Length: 106
Image (tube, rainbow, N blue to C red):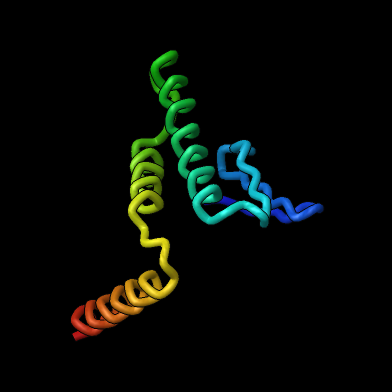
């Protein structure tokens, strides 16, 4: 989970359950720059925690968290950037979820 904190002037700092991840957004960053920073931060968490895990047995990143970060990276890389396309995709996914919920309820 990431926490975003707004600090002046127009800077957003992100941290995760692992502490500060060195991720700083400016509201002036383009969407692509912000997405790339998120990808790099997630990859950095994976890399650092993998190295810790290799150095000492039993330490490092939880496999479920690692998988979550890998899926987050994949999602960010493959997500449509066009707002209308993204909105349509979200509507489709919401409809699919409603249909699945209805099937589970019956």
